[in-house]
Image 1 (cartoon, rainbow, N blue to C red):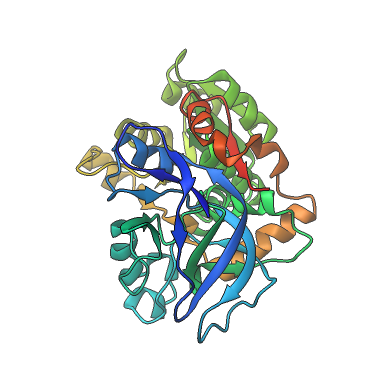
Image 2 (cartoon, rainbow, N blue to C red):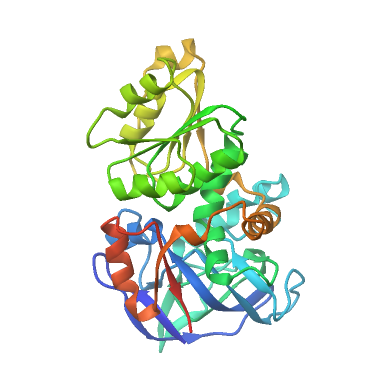
Length: 366
């Protein structure tokens, strides 16, 4: 099959033919139809999130089940599926207590580029090729754990469904599942990339009264207005904390979201929330990165700082519901896709992402 392989940090991905082994126990062969181009992949390419190489990147995808291995019960050939980038073992503490997106077993193995059994399914001759999050969606096909496959209705377009697997679930889930945004509240969203835009529309779905989007790029603020932001702040031109206070009569926002993963934005979010407000950190920070907040107002104003990983999602429930919302005209996905690319154009897609030209680029397989 054809795949995009990374061999070294800060080097272009190499689109080439590699071999794919058949599925083993509780594994599924998926033919990918589309894959989103995400900043998490870019972080690996730039070395800010270290991963073993060579590896086929990609963790946001959708496709069609072609074959299943022994003991697979969750899907069958012909099913249309969205891929979860945190497969679950089903037996660890996190899985058995209902937080399968925090699977203890998968957490370690996926960072090493292995499948759930600790082995690899891709190779080029004798050279093993690692899996990204057991998915590697920048390829024509992949063998994935059955727990990574979320069946969806077949009238859902798969190029849009791909985005449900990461950006949409992460952003909408942060607003709805993690923060439990209340109707009529004020929400501030720092960072208007793929995840931040979905925090905006998650807040809108929750009935927030005022949604304030903050970014450094004017085109991203325009995207945010399309997705439901009632106010926008260009942080390259004005102090976002002061402006948020001005827009809220001096009180501050009820909720602030860091959709980038930057210590300064966590601090600004803390300063921009009202007494009793909530700060939600979504963006993934690099190894060793820390943030600080002043201790006295943290306690005296009873503010909360929450982490949101994968939108705190009940994936087998939430992702089909998101598909339903899109088909009912209540969730924006078409507007999220700025441009479609062929697999051979994948390096161009990442260049556009790095320049901030796209909300979401999508690799479409013929």
